[in-house]
Length: 357
Image (cartoon, rainbow, N blue to C red):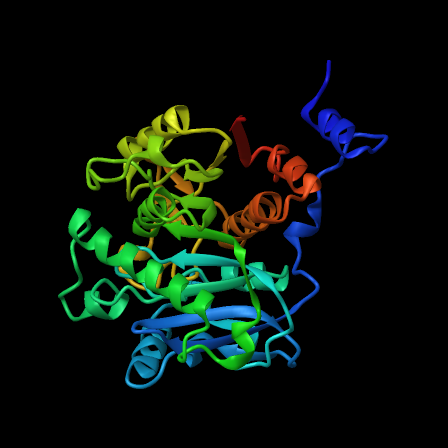
């Protein structure tokens, strides 16, 4: 029987089946820089840097009064669920590019650094990641009691945020620092989003021909909340990550993710993660009560009423960032060994992968 790996070898001229490239599970060869840009909305950019990284507190990415507010939130959390520190060069000098660009859309009532460990990991592997705050739907809007509702109306605002960020980064607008202007490969653009962000990047991929590959985490792209999202109208590679014990979107949401997988245009992969909750892949898990399902003790949604322990938070984050790197390596860099990783469930017994080519 001819396996997919053997077929790849025939196509690229190798003599043996290509093994999975497990280097995607470890930090890449690049030091990581990050800086805050004002592109009409606040944007956090993560990128390869020539500067030296340092251990810094996550609230350092904000400015006061939000910096103090975020630190106060963390101080009130006694669990290890939310990330508190990162290794990065703040405002570091960008390494000469060009590198592929990945747009990142945060979850409902979250922040631009809600999944910073994924962004940081991608940057270490030679990607530039741009994550805007979706103003009006951030954590601080939620704490003030005026965060926008989940629905089509604000999805259009979020999708416009991403479009403006792409426009300004690729055009090298005046708000973009000189070094970053030459760092991005305009022909290799992807997008990744979690929760409301997954639906947002789905609409972006549906409408913006510059986007070549998309990752949707823990939410169906096409669902009744967003009638304008049509997965059949997306014609780029997709990767969906499903948390099997997702108590936030529940069985209905997960069934919709599976249905999206069945009707999407190939290539598409569905990565199912055992014992994972909605927030298992983020750095804000447990920061406030609404972000709790995904760390520590919980109740299964697959077996109602059954108590269990969520997948270790670091394992969940590690799965998301490794598959993100492998996926974008495959579809933005055309790396055959990355496809072998995408098709080989890892960790075994925790991850299952379904593929439609």
